[in-house]
Image (tube, rainbow, N blue to C red):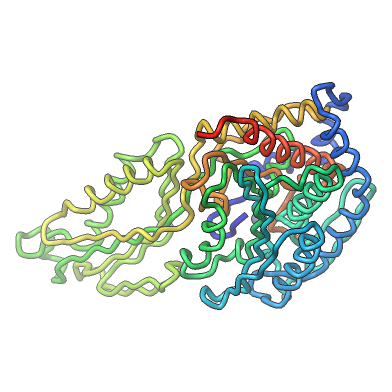
Length: 451
Ligand SMILES: [Zn+2]
């Protein structure tokens, strides 16, 4: 998941308290249900038959550094996955990232008569070549540590081996699948619209999108809603004068009191609404105040006896749906538009990750995944609390695709840290779940009446 939007599950904290062995032990070892078709049983067998190869592929790509800004490394991971998809009969292409100052993306298409299914991965990690964390390391039979092993090279491998199992079982031929591996998920290129164009183009006409980001550390959960995250900058001005004249009609309240009014009204009007948060993270005020373009640092100067002329505040805004986002922005603009005497204020919103609301379509897709999991003998799958799910690339297709599911990549813990660890026992489990889901999505819509 994406770095700057604090994407990762706060739930990872809970997972810390839960040893990996417990997470896996929660999966009941039940027999496969007779509801599985012969083809689906063949898919499950094919996943097991290829598991050693899947693990080898995971080790191989984890050992290629692909920090977002290591363009050669990102391309190299893309080349490895591209060869895999070529061998599965996909038409593959590399989308160059020069236009958004990143390595680029890998896009692979398998046309077929079935409904279009979009599978989403990413090639990059947060660990640049300067990081000491570079290698895949086997800790024991069931766990391995490595940069990006769950975020999200494990999910990337699940995509490949779910498709391979479907091909082995003779079920891929009629499927209509597009795979997008972005090269800049952890540190998106700019402009963002350019950087996500390939993903959004691939999403058009898709019936379902599945993201293979690492889940919440518990294979009994998956993601059907993610809060969007964008940023805002509030700027206020006041009338500079000797402090002894503050509050007089000619001087008014000054820029700092105006910014304080705005922030206090944000808090009083909007705090506490479910799934809505907004955090002022940096505030600078005085006679002169300016934040840098990233909004993460800046300079300010002023004197105790001079009424403040400028204040700048940068913050974020997280919402669960486009409606909540629109409402929050409207309220914030209304608050900003009123002023204390002799001051002005303006707010600018900078679009970031859009929200992915928990739609009925997403619930339907989770229900299919849950049923596939239970019938494979792996127990039920429930939705993650959206307040715990961070931003990820699937949100960019939220408005384009009726059914979305994410967080069904490889389980483990501590992503974005040097303790990033995968539960390797979950690799075949999650690959089977994904493959059966994709097969059923194809088969189901193929038999549905055409509108
Ligand atoms: Zn990720």
